[in-house]
Length: 203
Image (cartoon, rainbow, N blue to C red):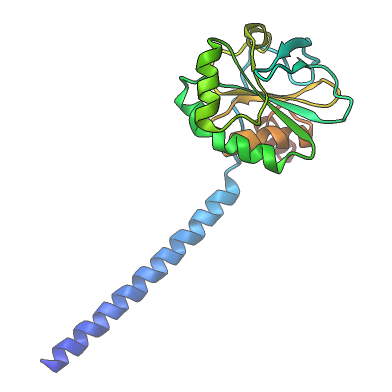
């Protein structure tokens, strides 16, 4: 009886060790795949303003009564991240914590402006429900038409000179941060950057 128990214990430990080795091998393979797969950037749509263009200046007033001109050069050298959202968009609501975190982490060089249109009362309730009172929030149909926003959430990054540096549909932290990286690398999107690198390697 004791002999059988000893054998079963040894077999059990051997199985545990084998499973541990399998898990380690899988973790290693996941790490290799993560290195090989390029990060997903914001979805760049074909229509609308082109990255590198100077968008038309659109005068707006936020819900706190402050006026600003979206698309104009910034005298303090700061860029503007314009994010189009809606109170009825579930993806927008899920993205808001990421927006607030990015606003804090990039505050040295970036201003964040939320934009939408519709009922002011509905948007004020949206702001209160999601703790957005510290972020400029504008309601402007002409602004959405200027950037040809068809789907949400949509973001546009405008540099201090008033030049559109990145834009696209965003639904995750990676998509949002890809806009910052695209501006740093001077490309329209991260997809364009990785495609150009792949072409140069092939050549």
